[in-house]
Amino acid sequence: MILQVRAFARLHFGLMEISPGEPHCYGGVGMMIDTPTMTVQGTVRNSLDTHAVSCEGDPYWSERTQRVLEIWQQRYAPDPIPFESFRVVEPPLAHIGLGSGTQWACSIAGLLRLAGRLGDLSSTNHSSNTASIWEELFESAERLAIDAGRGLRSHIGCEGFRRGGLIVDWGQDPTGNSGAMRERTQVVTFPEHWRVVTFCDRSYEGESGGLEASMFERCSAQANPFRNEMIQTIREQMVPAIAASDWVAASDAIGRYGERAGRIFEPMQGGVYRSSAIAECIHYLRGQGICGAGQSSWGPTVFAIARDCEQAEWIARQWKNHSPRETLVGIAGIAPSAAYECDSSS
Image (cartoon, rainbow, N blue to C red; front, side, top):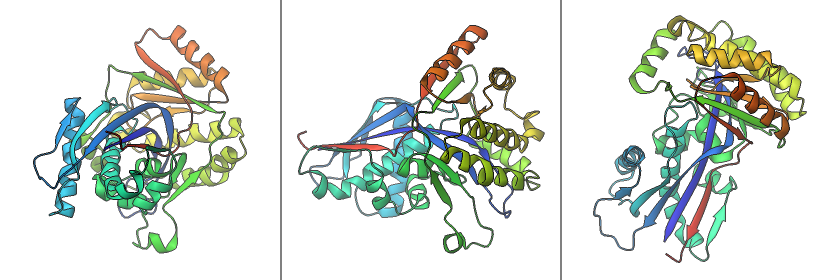
C-alpha cells in the first residue's frame, strides 16, 4: 500500500513579538497558498522486519525525512517505523520564506500517523483534502509540532497544514495557561476570489538554523513597542475586513502589519526588510496601488494581495516589465489543509 501527502506553501506576514516572557510571544499572521506544492509518498511495510527505511529522490529532502523519522523513533520506540520506504515525488524549494521545512516535516509526521489508520483507509482508494483527518490525528497544532519537530516558535505552519486558510497565531501566554484562557490559533475564512502574487528572487536565501537563532537572540532583548498596535490592527481592521471581503481595508492592514513586524529585526538587518531587493519590490508594488504587499518570513519571497485573477495577472506583468531581476513570479489562491491519498492496489 502507498500513502501520499501533498502539502501547500505558507506565507508569513510577520511576528508580533519575539521577546520571551512577553504576552503574545511568537504570535503572528500567515496563510496557506495553493502553489507551490510538495508531495511525498510512503510504502507501507508488509512485515514486521525492522530493516532501515530508505528514502528515494531529492537528497536534501531525503535527509529532512530521516530527521523526522529519528524524532518518531525516539518518542515511540520500540515500535518500528511503519514504512519500508519514502519517495520524494515533488520537492519544494528550501529557504525562500514559504515554510517548506515545516510543511515537509508535517507531511512525514502525517504519513506516520495515517499508517495507524490503515484499516479505515485500505477498503478503497481514498483521497481527501479536508481538515477532519488531521484534526483527528493531531488534536492541536502543538501536538503536530512535537511529532514533526517543527513549530518551536510560530504555530502558523502546523495549523496551516492541519486546517488551511488564513491563520492568526496569538502566541504564547506568559502565565502558561493559554489552553485554559484562549485558543492560540484562529482560522479566518479568506475570500476565494482573492489572489496572492508571489515574487521570489533566487539570488538570495532566507535565514535558517544558527543564523536565524542568532537574529532572534539579538533582537529579542526588548519587547516589541509596536505589539499592541499590531494586535489592534489584526482585531479591528485585518480580520473584519477579510471577513467582509473588503480588499482595500484588508490590504492596508496587511501592509501596515508587515512593516511593524519588520521593525523588530531592524537593529540587525539595517532596515524594515531583509534585503534591498525585497524593499525595492515592495515599494514598487505599493507605488502601483497594491498596499497589501510584504515580505514572507525571512524572504526572499515577497507577496501581494490581489482582488481577483485579472488584477493578479496585471501585477505580475507590471513587475516583469519593470524589473531586470530574474524573479520567479507565481499566482496563488487560498489553500485548504494538506491532502492525502491512499492507493491500496500497490
